[in-house]
Length: 52
Image: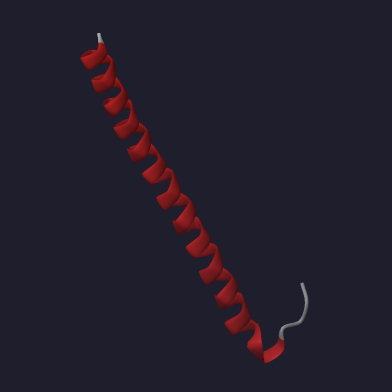
């Protein structure tokens, strides 16, 4: 690991904050994906019932 000197705390803190934000974005994306897939399945089921 490179020597970051007196800025080590700021640099490592920035990396940690960035990693945390990326993790939150991924989690929210997966959560929304699940919600959208369930909603789509409900709409498709309704469409099949109304067509049949």
